Length: 123
Image (cartoon, rainbow, N blue to C red):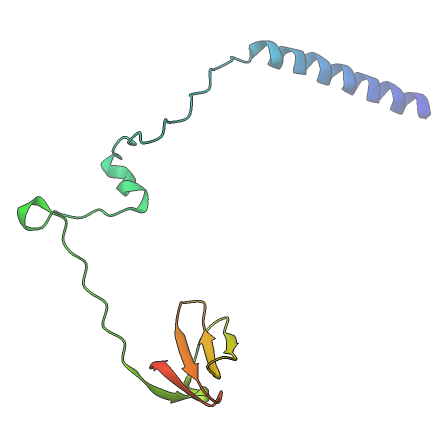
């Protein structure tokens, strides 16, 4: 029983070596393109590529791209801690001014003297 499995393993190994040698000989070697030099402009994308997710639009007046709409200005006021919704909050205590700064991952900043009422952009 051991000899039949040994013979089968040897045949399989021989077949793999024989097939693998043909593959190595058939490979073609291609030269790798050198990286782009600093400041080199990439070629324009084909229309079907949609500019790799970049801006694709019709030019506005004067051949310039249209200006995106402005974001509304945030309203500032005083809110309680229960009204604030923010991801990854971090509270920085400033001992010199006796003020607490609440910073969120979106760049939102609020400050408070007592950790209860916060002054900053309204939610």
